[in-house]
Length: 257
Figure 1 (cartoon, rainbow, N blue to C red):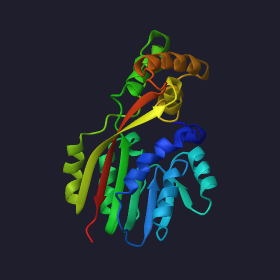
Figure 2 (cartoon, helix red, strand yellow):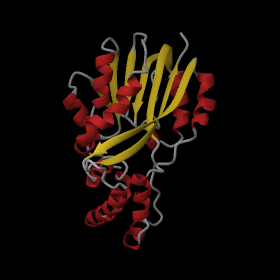
Figure 3 (tube, rainbow, N blue to C red):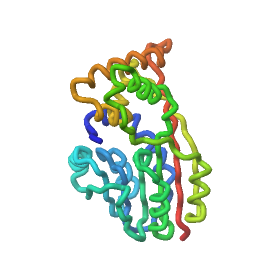
């Protein structure tokens, strides 16, 4: 799957807000390494560096475009390319921070278990994942892909993102690995200038697997069909803006000291 840092940061303030809210729940860290997993263009990495300047910080991502943007943004921070599905977490780590990445990783609870096991005493695992597959923004991606004009291109192909497990599943799997764990949902309501802005937002994330499947000459047609559905699903408010509802799941687990 290909990513575009430039497309992603078109809505940087809105995308960074959950990372800021997640980081606010991380208290004092022990000395040692901190990792920003799925660091993207470095917007969340920048928050971590400002909050915990005494910890050695490394950003991890599997996309060259995102890593190049992160390097440019934070030239004094270490970044490495890795696939989180197979990445081996270093032992005695102070912080594993993951903003909007593990929703793309199958069987990610297994990985979260490994991350908690690798925490130093007093260390923290902090994770945020979009939980919005039931929202019109995402339902309409699939509906558009099933239209006759695009059905053949998507036939036999699996779009990689799966629904998140229920919150109780995370608690049942992770509670005995951590001294303390909190799981909660936050629903964000983003005011965007119009329905086309929702399409631009989704082009940076949720639409990527769909666009990657299509031949280049069919992408404009697909986006036009999707945008027409979005305009109907997200009517303008009295002030002319549209409201994008965006649920997210948060997990914060700490290791006993």
